[in-house]
Image (tube, rainbow, N blue to C red; front, side):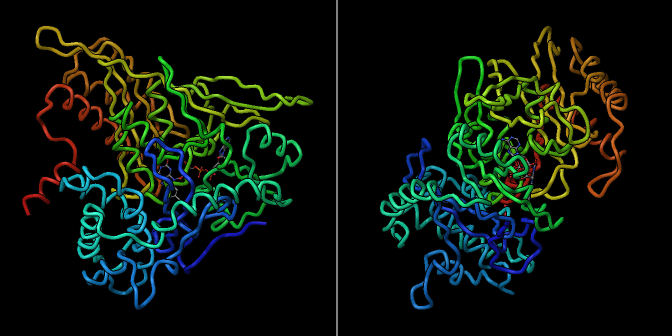
Length: 482
Ligand SMILES: Cc1cc2nc3c(=O)[nH]c(=O)nc-3n(C[C@H](O)[C@H](O)[C@H](O)COP(=O)(O)OP(=O)(O)OC[C@H]3O[C@@H](n4cnc5c(N)ncnc54)[C@H](O)[C@@H]3O)c2cc1C
């Protein structure tokens, strides 16, 4: 049985946001918020994702005589035209209204505010292109939150909701149905899989939701692993960060912003807020897609992947660790055995002098799959006014049938001066590493050209730091001069 939570007729691929709903769960994040609000695309949301969560739809917000502050702000700014997208915008702004209210500092700085609004609205497509009044409504909402003038019914009921959700989780676990399972521990999950070997494993469902809506796939049983607590853990060890497979991209973004700040801009362009809040690290590696955004980043960081299985006749799971560089073996093929799951990713910490850059090239800035994704980790040193590369790892997505390192190109750069001439040679070596394909996202020659250009960008950023290379920065400079 596969149940989709659809509220509107739309394209069912999760990238217009018109059907956005909000899932509320009790929070144990460091933010200390009693509840966590996450927008999600209902058109690709599978029913197991609702387990132990409160579902809020646009119908719950206000009444015609008593609008919710989000609705009121949109009305005051005339921010609805044909109306098709409006429910989705309401729900994304509702998420912003609730989720970010602790971030007062962010609200008071205009460029951070603008970036935050873009982050929350990036997954909502307005077909009339009337974004300006919607952004004005968002600004008004942030002012309201900043001044703490307004509470809504959801604030008033927050504590009771948190209690209900926690109790409901315990109660419902005892009543799992035969076709949709939502285990909470790894042993329970792996044991269920032993009993249901044909069951589909679903984490965030942002890939598999499309398998249902686009390929009309059905499964005899589903095991939702998004509530498995061991998969949600993050451990900060002295030499590495261990991130559970069930950590969402939104959560990863929080972690990376602290420990790997140079990865954050790319992660902010992973899908949309609605996608990031559901999509998981394990799901991104589980699909083993050549255009997934995490593999290049993790390859450049020399990460390893921890796999887990329950051996026959045992109740104690066993794990093994594989270097990510060896993990991908072909187009959507990996070293993972058929009885194994992804348990965690081990990411070596950066030394203070390490450089990390991650570049995502896609047709649209927001909510789009990469044509090329490049991640570069390097150790460089300056001698006599010249910067030398001591060590480098270059990893690319979108350039081959699998995400992979550019070994020939790395050899050219290793130990070399970081100059335009060397970079031009390295860009040529990319032709030895990759023979990309032409497809709807980009042609082979574009991919090779842009990959070489990204090497140039890396060189400029390290040797001429005053040169502006980031289009989003240029964009916000222009906005502030308008
Ligand atoms: C609108 C939209 C935009 C998107 N944008 C991006 C983007 O910008 N960048 C990008 O990289 N991707 C993007 N995606 C794809 C998708 O969001 C990611 O691949 C995501 O990380 C998948 O995670 P999930 O938890 O939703 O996976 P699921 O759909 O739940 O699962 C995907 C696969 O992984 C397997 N799996 C899940 N967890 C495990 C585990 N622990 N062990 C073993 N197997 C497992 C599942 O069985 C399934 O085969 C986008 C998708 C949509 C719909």
